[in-house]
Image (cartoon, rainbow, N blue to C red; front, side, top):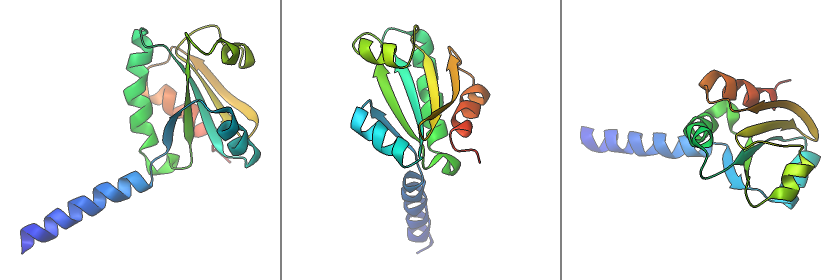
Amino acid sequence: MKLSHFVTAVVLSAVSAFAFAGEIKPYDQASVDKLAAEGKPVVIVVHASWCPVCKAQAPVQSELLKEPVNKDVTMFVVDFDRDKWLLRKYNVTMQSTMIGFKGKDEVSRSVGDTTHDGIESLILKTHAS
């Protein structure tokens, strides 16, 4: 009986962790506009599949969005090689760029940061009071 209680607790814990997770999605202009109009926190990530810095950023970004404090953050991934119009729109010249928005306002930007603390700081600025 104790084992079944343990298994139930582990499953409920895992499910609740996902309920508090922020989201990572491919870039979608309509969704970005909707979240901005609602004043929601958004992070735009400019990623290239061949970029080692981008590959180093990805697990840190994913880990941070699982934290309850970031449950309302939505991260949109822009493909550096395909989405040239978005690079112009957001004034981006390099892959591995991250841009944080609180509603319609840009509140943080970094290029090439792979550190937990640096990426966390950028994300936290999107929903700071």
